[in-house]
Length: 163
Image 1 (cartoon, helix red, strand yellow):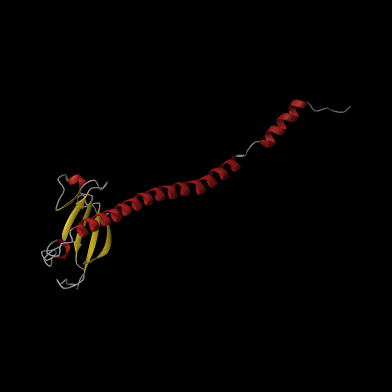
Image 2 (cartoon, rainbow, N blue to C red; image 1 turned 180 degrees about the horizontal axis):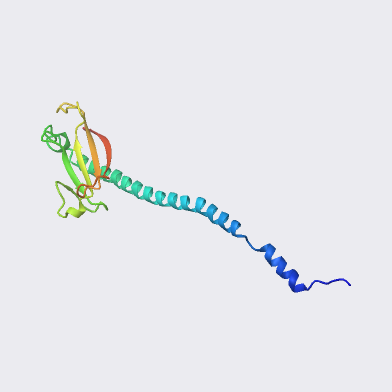
């Protein structure tokens, strides 16, 4: 007499063969951890780097605004071309992070002092009234809120020409 298998037994055996083993689950989770966690870390770094690039872009925009303001005063007896313009030391400007407030000296609210810009002459350079050009360097430091050790620093150079 031949023995017939019951269809239920065959389905159960097929189910056991198609299930994942514990080893396969552990290997899959390990691969996910090796791939996904570094990818999340890179995404976080990219977001942080994007914010840094935005503040650098703001610093560049701020430098352009300062250039325009200094160029607007082209009177040869005052302003940028006055020989005594930087003799008493650097010309210090503070600006808020959103560039809404830009003032010489200090801002009224200390919280608005995000950028500190120091305008000075390059080392070894001395402007004289008969010079056709005046060279200035800008030192940007941000954030300028207390004694933050993670400050950024950026330098620009500008050449002003007499008309």
